[in-house]
Image (cartoon, rainbow, N blue to C red):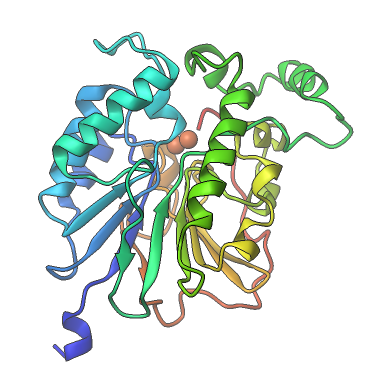
Length: 301
Ligand SMILES: [Fe+2]
Ligand SMILES: [Fe+2]
């Protein structure tokens, strides 16, 4: 092993969905490459607090640092969960759980990765979505939702992701975006960033969705220039269950989803493999690759 090999890695994964026994087994096998590895977890760990705790606790014992950004599934008030909190109260409960486990959240100061290809500020984000990734031909959220109800592709969030005390999920999203912009502006101007969010900051990854109307639940146009304005080295996201690497304006976007067993069984690569974010793996991405390679289904992400 060379000196470089002994230095830590910045690794990432998302959409663990450990409510599935097969996915739980994948998490049980997840290990760092070195003693100094950090793990970014970009949301959709599970739906119940007990499952979320199990997964984050398991991973936090193995990695030097675990950094979590919430997915929509963690924010569901699920009928199977003994914790019945809604909206902001549920999110704050999960932040407290993470603090108990030593896992960093969007509410903590952004840590600085000093390993290979650093330093970079690592910022887990919680931004939600605001229905602004509308289907073609739709001008408003109402038109978009009417179209989605017509096709039957409606995200489960509509029933179980409550925005309380905000009047709507888009109002919660706008508040999160404003507060996050303020936080990101405080990062020293000479420091590149790795931004970790459940949703892509730009719409391009949703262009391969089998059901394009699902994009309404996949992010916000409010962040479409953030990869340029916040010195982003790598943008890490999940949610679409279409793991891949794309490049936009010279910025690497990494979707790091595991997804559901019925999805990962169809892929050729082994499931649950942690994605190397830094240092960049040789051959992990070609800057000339246009967004839009591959194809995935829209559904209950
Ligand atoms: Fe998701
Ligand atoms: Fe997911």
